[in-house]
Image 1: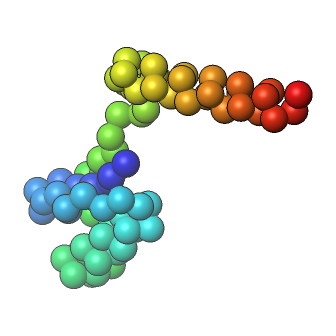
Image 2: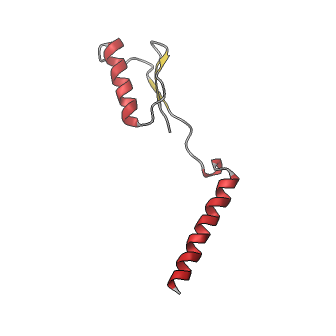
Length: 80
């Protein structure tokens, strides 16, 4: 998941960062350099859409199910 910082006053968007802490660093750096440390009006954080299980491709569901089934069978075989 990546995040981007957007300043509507400057009409700029930061490059994507992977963590919330990286996003906070981008915000702080921009505020210090261009706004004297103040929070600009119209500031926003751009986040990707939330993850849904329906986003997982069918092939990955099949492989994942087979892997879980294999682990269950192996655990049952080991117990008996």
